[in-house]
Image (cartoon, rainbow, N blue to C red; front, top):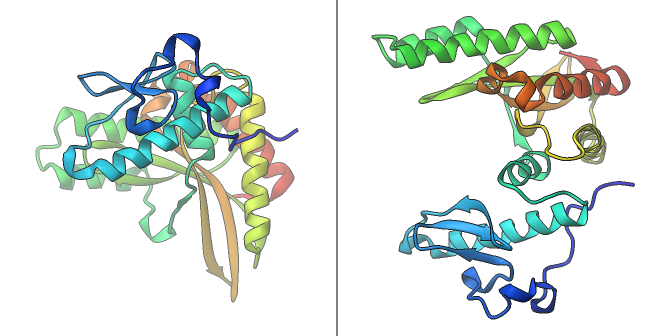
Amino acid sequence: MHPQPHPQPLTPDAAPADARGTAWLHGVEGVTQDAAGYVYWRGKEIEHYSFGRDREIDEQTATRQLQRTCLALEANGRAVTQRSYLDWIAVYGRVRTVACATFTDVFGCEAFYARYDTAYTTPERFRAERAAKAAERIYTHTGMTAHFVPEAHCDPAAIVLVKIARTASAAVTDEALNDLRARLLAAFPTQGPGALHSLVRESRHEDGAIVTYVGMSLYSGAFERPEHYGIDTTLAVLRDFALLRGSIH
């Protein structure tokens, strides 16, 4: 049975008895906010908003999305926490589209951070070192080569891709992504894959054909605490997916 990412909106009667009559944030049932900007679902702290008065529409959209995500977690029997909320967004949020032209290797990360800050300060050096640790662990557990997208002030994103088809249709790509989602959720029945930033798709021109890849974008910083973030389980899911659905890259 596949997970249910889009259950029906909460109704006032479905809200907890002690929450009825509460001033919902932007009228979205179940969501409240305190004076410091912290956002709660059914009384549990989940998010923090600082949109400002000029971005009220963006805050309304984010509030509705928070409600949908929390309802989806509940519909799938998962406790709603900050961790499970962020995990669900990573699995079911917008699929990241990447281009191989943006990729680099570990040495590219080191060069990027050295250029970004000519003094190559300790935080920048640590980011390059975390990328190296991530690449080593990914290769050890999957045989896959990690690509990286360096970002200023942040750990680089580790991209791992699986070639699924030549000239794949949108339907084939979506089906492969849904399969990967289901595998991740089955492997993490409670908290979720904490290292996952998003699912990824890419299309390339190879030998006169368009080749489709799907995979994961992982926080390389999470590889500092692999047990806490379920790194090895996440990589095992991707490895098994690659063996059954395509070829590693």
